[in-house]
Every structure is written in structure tokens, then in C-alpha cells.
Length: 490
Image 1 (cartoon, rainbow, N blue to C red):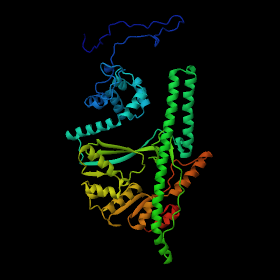
Image 2: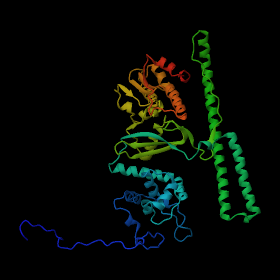
Image 3: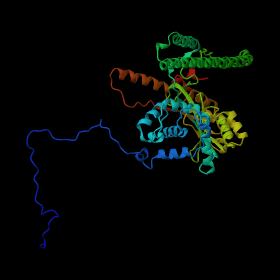
């Protein structure tokens, strides 16, 4: 090769001309054939990545002692009965579903047919929503014991501890609609209708066994009996609520009787006593025919829906959950002591410190925890000079905690947020020094006015600032008047 000359690797090959298309025929293509049966040698384990976290879930479940679950299985060697699904599969399915933020049995059952991770857990074992739901409902006590055992193992390994726990609650939507709540009188009518439906079905089957297949007849009968059972449960709840109403009315009457002489003496001296509170109209108790234990609660978005109050106690070191409780009381007040007692019963020792926001604070709880050697946040820091609260529920809890420490008004500066009437009242009593409040009346007024404009097709602002105010002892009375809060003040 001469100096300065460069040739490519394939420069010596002749150029190939692309053939010209001859004629007007259609192009030949390979089309998808999806109806063709194919045999593919593949395993579920081969389709799942080696580092998929569902493998960690299964490894964890394999290490659990499920003797209590296995003891309930009736299909054993030497005896008849269809073998049920391995409890480890059901537990792993729910555990992985929880990790993925799924709580519906129907959704888990669907994923068992469509999602490789859930298919891998099933390993060819058939699954349906009823089996999944029954497992979760029927074995609640066993699952709680497994939680305790797992946390105990973390404590022994030094990963977690009960030195300090933090408690908080969340309202979980119940599987009941607002329309399912009925008054006691209406529930009695529903019970009569349900009893008649069950009787008619039984009569129909007795007189004409061939009217429907056995499977259809059994399904209809189960549905009618389930309806009757749920109505009876709702009736029992309304009777219980009515008894509580009567007990509350009796206590209120006793308080009024004890206070009457004091009011009479004040009137005789010409002193203006507290205005008589208007007796609220007693409402007939209501219960849901879908879920009798559900109660209407205020949710995080401000709306009111049937729900349950789920409480969690978490180790602040590892963020592992040490305890869980569920009830149908919407308020968090008074739930510290029961949770602490439950932890002591499960683990044999109490947390040294129990942290919770002001909404949990109850004087009796704080004193009982102190007697058992448990510190609340204010007891752990007795020299605290000020407490700022993100909402006025916590503000009222802070005041209760300060009273439990025998602190007087103003000894610890307290700031609130929301402008709630009970917190504004505490400003006048000296417990709260300031409260950052929104203009509730203006929020409602401007919100309705904006909605009307939007309905008319008029242009509205994307963001409307209704302002705020810092309420202190100097302007609290005027703020109450300006925002029309007088009727909410006690």
C-alpha cells in the first residue's frame, strides 16, 4: 500500500444495488397468531427476578411458627376432606399485599391471576376472594401473636427496642355506606322483612324442590340469612347506644341538680352566672346494616364517613410496629394508657417513654403512666418553656398535660393553630398565649360565592387567599365577634 493511501476494510467489495419492486402485489409480512397453542418450558421461579422483594416476604413467612394455623385444618392424613391452601401462602399474600398498599381481598385475588409476584406466591394453588377474606377475619388473634413474636425477635437481635414508642392513629374507611345507617324503628321493620324473606325461601324449597337448582337455592338462602343476621346485629348496637344516651342524660341531670343551689344563690346575690346551655335534642341512635360496629368519624380530609380508628405504637429507633389496636371511637383522647397496658402485657415490660400528640392527652392517663414509671414528653422535659401545636386538638391536649404536671396558666407558653372555639376560650383563661387562626366565616362565604360564579360560567381565581390572624388576649373577643363564633363558645 502506497504511503498516504488509506483503504477501508470492505472497500474492495462491489456495490450491491437494491432490487426494484416488480408488479403491484401486497408485501409479504409475518402476522401475529395468538390463537396458536404453544408449549413453553418455563417455571414461575424463572420468571421472577432473583432480587424481587416478594422473595424476602416468603423467606420471612417460612421462618414463622404457624402451628396455631395448622391446628385448625381438618383435612389430615388418614381422614377424608379436601386439602386447603397452605397457610403460609395466605399469610404471605396478605403480607406482600400490605407492603404494596393493597387491602382488598378481591384485588389480591385478581392479582393472583395477573401479577407474576402474586402468582409466584400461589405457586399454582387456586385462590379466591372469599378464602383470602375468611383467612384475615378468622385468624386475627393468631396474626396479632405473630406480630408480637416478630417484634420480640427484633428486640432480641438488637434491631428494635421498647425504650421509646410513639403512638398515632388513623381513621380507616369501613365497608359500609352512609345510606346503610338506619334508626332503631327502621331496623325493626328491616328485621321483619328479612325474617319474612327467609321464611318464604324455606317454604318455596319445601313445597317445590325443583323450582331452582340446589346451588342457587342455597346461595339465596345464605344471602337472606346473612341479611337477617346483620339487621339483628344493628338492632343490638342501637339498643346499646340508646342505653348509653340514657346513662349520659342521667349523669347530666345529676350535675344540674347539684348545680341548681349554686345558681339560685348567685341569682339571689344578683350575680350573673353562666348562661344556661340549650339542651340538645336527643337523636335516635343509628347503626349500619352492612357493618354494625362501624361509626361515622371525621376523616383526614374533613369529611364524615363510616370508619374505624386504628392505633399504632411504633419503636422510634427502628420504626417497627410494636402494637396495633382497633376500635370505633373517633377521638384519640384516652388511648395512651390502654396501648401502654397492651404493650406491657404482650412483652412483659413497659416502654420507658411514650410519645403522642396532644390529641391523646388525658390527665388520668398521664398520672397512671407516671405511677408505672413511664414518661410522657412533658415529664421527660420538665423545663420546657413553650409548646407550639400544629392544630388545636393538640393545643387542648397540651393544656391537659400541663395540668397533670401541676403547671399553672402562663407558666409554659402555649401557641395553637386553627382558631378553634375551645382553644380561643383558653386564651381568655391564660392557658394559651396566641393562636394562628383562619377566618372561617370568610372561607365559607368566599367558597360559596366562588362556586356560584363557576356554576354561571364566570372566571374564578385559581387560588383565593382568605388570610389569617394571630389571636391573643388583646383581640380574642373581637375575633370571635367578627367570625360569628359566639354560639360555639361555652
